[in-house]
Length: 208
Image (cartoon, one colour):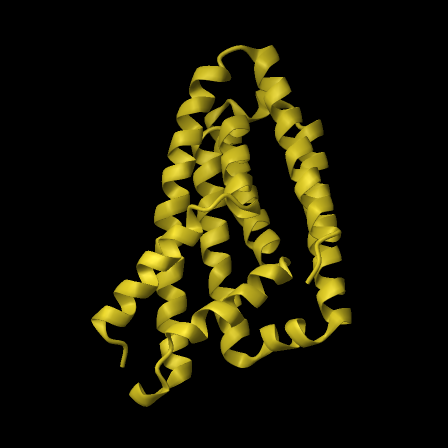
């Protein structure tokens, strides 16, 4: 259904795009530097699994609605931007000491995992990217275009987990060096919150 060369070209192209600096990878990096490796890995996993939703959107035509309707695109991007503003504010006002305990760390990771899925799903630019990118690697002559899209989507999810996971580990290692000082840890949280709020504003004002 999908040939090996088709999958290889798609994977290499996807990896280049995954490691290109963008809001998602900045989000993972920010979480890791401010909150540590566990938080960063939770964010990486959440954003990766959120791509399953975008794959389904592309297969069933929901992404096409966002691409063709200015109103739908605006509503989703504003909702996504407001959500990032909310996450940034929560991180800005969070108590860094709360996440230092093992219990607090795991609780924080679960919350970040859920937040990252929603943040990904509420980004209409990701939905439109999937709609534009995946069909370039679908070969109708091989049959079942929708199934090919699903396979490509799941491959992209795995590749995103790999790429974002590496970024998360690097950011976590940096956090372990910087966050040993409580005062610095507090500033890291505020800085990370500010970055998330800026990403929210960027999404709200983004063009289609």
